[in-house]
Length: 276
Image (cartoon, rainbow, N blue to C red; front, side, top):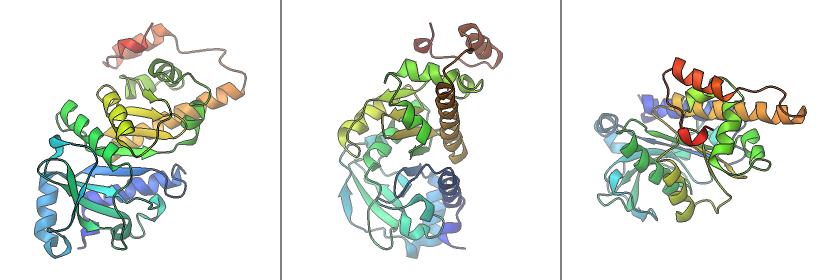
């Protein structure tokens, strides 16, 4: 058994493969991280101790995440291609540990040909910290991709949470059920820095999806399937929205009453800020 055969690593590789087939990751675009369960990391240390660098070099994160002190993450590397993750995970992925103050990280495994975790690692970690707190530890996956039609909508829709939410809720009947809290939207911001990390994590207190205008989408989930499925749903709804606009716009719609009936039938609470 190799370290890359571990279930959480294989699930990570599976999402990367599925996402590459969707063509959401041009070149080295997009990134993915997973907050490793304690029992998974304990087994990894027990079974693969010689492969781990337990006394490696500590590097500043650039943000402070004390909620994640001593936690370990599996994350894509900066400049790495998502489509290469399955071919050579040991070169394109890293297992990293956060220090006891939540201010530095150390690479324990991976990135065998050099490199560092994704440039969006500060944003990932701040989102993980928020979701660990707001979901009582349930959410463990943060996923960032560049889905084409969702990005296209950021050039034609007003960049606010309500407009985006209502547009996508009205495209597929299941959307209000899958993301009843709605969607957060940010105007264009410089990627990779503290400002966008803080702005995204602030929206993640309410939403599981944050759209970065003219750039891409961040989403959170309890599992790899959940995070991928959420991204897939958002992009499919956006694709329909783009097609509807290309055909002259809506002639029919899911009404406010329809939305409220759906919420009642499926026992979900729609975000009242997104309703009339």
